[in-house]
Image (cartoon, rainbow, N blue to C red; front, side, top):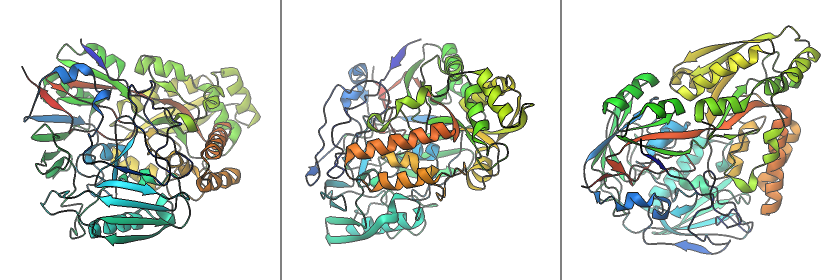
Length: 539
């Protein structure tokens, strides 16, 4: 089998991301330095362009660009979960964000190397105090309905998104959105926030569209054709897309196949062209008709714990679970040893803010786990239900290994598999669970990874409470100096690790099978399955 490794670069994180005087981190995917340099400005400077590639071609496998790309054709992407919403301001999960990346664009958008480039905007500048963000709109950007993006559309989109996201989001400090002229939008914040730019990657939509859920209209490379819940989403090339020469394909379909085994069979049968989240075992049985693109899922995978559930309220019990788990066994068995083992809620590719000391805080130690359980009054163990979304084989398989490992210390764990929508309702929203195995993603802003553990965060499904954590988080968010900000974020990560807020496992490797009649598939450091760069290979 031909394996095509597409290694994502970790850009030098001391380079600025145009986020205030502090020069923010350029967050990227996994393990290697990029082989190209893309300078971003310090505070007060501006970025401008007339055209940007969705992802720099240097990051693509060079062989792909010797393939003689052909315009036209169609592709079918397999997915094991349905969509939560087609309204870009209502999305809560990585799977849906992967899809709608093709429909919508923000003022800026991420690239495959973790940079942020102008999109609906062509130029932006940020004040020294990181309180004022000024954007010059790109001329002639067309919505899918043929109308041209206006300053009123942008203002409406920002204000609507801020209202929907609420006080627990980065937009809680939004002061006002000012239209200076037809091409200039100014976003003013109540407080300086050097991490705010990544928040502006959400989709710009027409102010006139009163039904973005049922009638999705964006500026992305593909436009909406139809959506049948539980079956598929069909897209068509946006012929007026501002970023020529993309996209290559005329049509695309996301096909929803809830059963992971069935999805893999469809891949082998050729009714699905691309399928993500394969295990190492599945990769081994595929033939020469597929390229295997290797990258990272950009997720913190963990057994997340309901800290309000007895006996998980006791830190000694949570620490015992961490000692009981052998993360390397899971990595070796499920991902061929290619995942990055984690000890806290941050992916390793956010290098400047990542605390590697958390990785070895809990070495596999059955005796230590048993001792802690005895000290906590659970020498005879206890029952634990692990709720897992059945549409993600990597999480189900991880849970099965966890059951075996926890049994060694007397914890009688059982697995409850549920559909994705049930998981969202019962676990994520209602917090009606004991433990769960999933992966959480984040944005290019480091604070986005940490805020869910604040005591009052609406998405704190772990019911984690720590006054020191809350205080330091607020300090980190307010600080503009980047060195101090990084120090505070590392403190937060260590608090989560020492408190065993969850049983952190790994940043899972992602194996994506791509029918080898296609080229151009890329990984991003955020949830984004970019179809615009995919093409059919010519003869």
